[in-house]
Image (cartoon, rainbow, N blue to C red; front, side, top):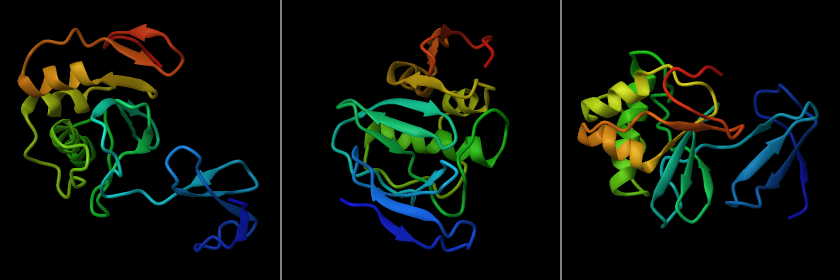
Length: 163
């Protein structure tokens, strides 16, 4: 698809380009300053199970077939981690749902997740931390996981590592 010039709705950048992301076919708006924006789905268009959650801005979901998607998000609640609040609570519930069904609806409220997932998402992980499925399942089931994560830069670390 050839990029087309568009006007960003908020009037922030009138020199943006729209294109389709080669990985998942989502529309992406690229600004002249290198930023990109896209609509966030409320459900993933995936059939392969959740493989890992990547804690970044935005939060990403990688499926077992290697596809990478922005985490589904309800317009009422943002997703976040690192403190006790609505964002980490909504992320914990989303993870709980996605472990069972990768096409599950985004979390429309920050509650009802297992306590272990709440604790996991309230932890102050470094930006770029990758939480593998095994760790997510262990947290959901209340089992120890070792809290080993891999950061985007390839460094393995535990809960004490810094960004």
